[in-house]
Length: 368
Image (tube, rainbow, N blue to C red; front, side, top):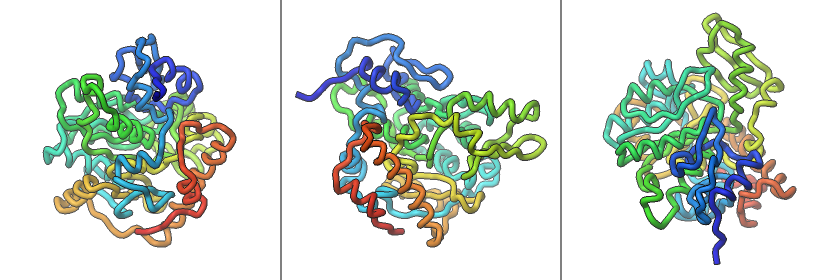
């Protein structure tokens, strides 16, 4: 008989252990789970022995091979970057998006296009001013998507807004989020049983995943405010060696050693920094700040990217061959660190077979 777990187990195994990623998807799915200032907690046991909240959590047992089969219909050939059709450089061709969005503004452009072309009724994103705790947002127009442009580096529980969007009547929802949030959405889509307890499972039809090697605790905002003073934060960029803050009077760079104490501990166990189960994945190029890295993964992702190119919304170019080894190395090193943790009996949520593990050790198969 299959083991059954609910909110009590979720609290004990994930939240009480400091492993909650703050994805937020369980918020709104269950009236007894709430979030305050990016902290998610079970405020009262619901009494269910078998709960969807436990099943969808990205930090409960997750079979990576099973996820590949669910999303892509088979095993992956590339054990580092996952399944994909192509890797590109991409950027928006819309000046107002480029000014507001992060790097190439591709995520903002794709979500806006999905709404404008009637592909979705609403888009779930993270909004709010730079330098402040971000808020989950349901956008219904290009303007509302644009207002969410730019990156927020703390763990906003924005996927709670997926449930909100569906309850408000959205039949088709796009979502953008961190890799842990993408994983939670895909686990939700795998749920079976009474759909009345899982209204959003079949409503999410386009997922834009973001690159994320770590997220910051909400305490970072108080720290940044003290660093900047009264100047006000206009933009925050995560660099390899720290954080760069743009203020009304210029730029301030904070070394990574001062930022490291604010990295959420659960991020150390993250096995997926490139949103492997998204329709498309978007991140920095770590090379040209005017462009994004764009990984097209699914047929839906390809359709949306092709539409954006044909409509003149974004432009793409080949990913520089000399940059690929750097991307692979960064992702592979992250995965190897997690495998080492698993050998030490942490990262218990991660379930892999021997072939998968060996594929990572052997660096996977690179293709463009």
